[in-house]
Length: 457
Image 1 (cartoon, rainbow, N blue to C red):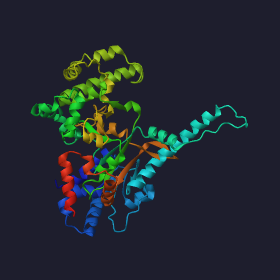
Image 2 (image 1 turned 60 degrees about the vertical axis):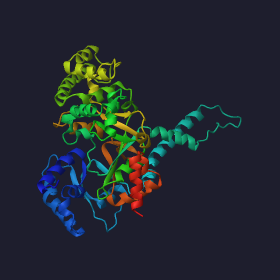
Image 3 (image 1 turned 180 degrees about the horizontal axis):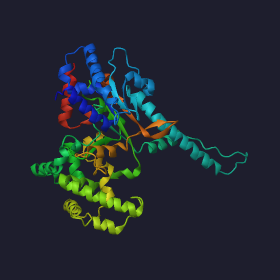
Image 4 (image 1 turned 120 degrees about the vertical axis):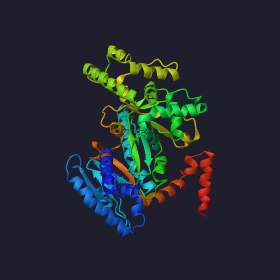
């Protein structure tokens, strides 16, 4: 879809507020591709410069809500500590970036992994040293009047490192301008979520016979490309990188890194996960009703208890579960999960959770796959819930390291893969065994991979 300059500016304005970082060059590549397709390098640079001078800089000078944004290129970001020095032959792509965003460029797989994991290994080593010191201080003095020395082994550090990385997860995007949202919140799919859900089941009921929970139905739909409220993630950074570089080599990719607490990681049998999954069966109008009444009751509970984490008022929760739209949601859950005996806490409907689902197919096993499942937005800032849901997911994005390893609450790190480095990273990943043949083990995908490999000979 080709856009005029004014339409393109409008798109950039919306996306900048949603993402806090966009690549202006890639936006022009996507939305004015035909216009710039046959341009020479200098012509393209001048075209982009003219657009930035005439449209972007006046936007930044207009004040709220763009006063915290600025235009930077590879070189600017490199000088700010991204460790990336682009060659003189490369186009200096331009970014629209908010001041609370820090960029790290991924240009080499091994260098990225070494740098990223060194911090966590150092943390693990320091923790092991403190533990050993504590143990030694409790040891009796030996016959030589020396405390018994306890040696630190690589196994000790590795075990602690594994513990530190237990709640780190990844997602790769072939375009850094891609919104970090489940597919149901893109376009206008959220308005038709329940219709899409039931139509797929009605057209292929045999495919869902063994799906005993709403989460199982949703992940099967996700597997086959249906728009759902699930977002694929992985515990393997190499898999995340594969998805960041495998297509669209002309666009900068991104590896999103999440860090969460144990309370945000659930399994397939979680009642809260089942409740959030069942929201897919409710009409858009019914969801609006649920949002309204859930906010009302959640606010009442907060007034009484001070925090949603304290003991909640049983009477309020009981009343909430007697509201018609909530009773209908419970009825839907019990139709699928006959032994579901839970009640719905209104605050749980606004959760965003990471789900460790059943590893019951080769693809999810190879991809070390998990899902993020989103509930309802606690703040309704737009008709399609995009901003509210995006805000929930962004809370788990890894924060930037500042001041000797301490994490900043406000500054986030975005890991960008420059387009010029995508091919080499893809080759390196393939040498490590991470390629289409591995990631997509189905016969059709393997046949396609082999065909493509032989086409290069």
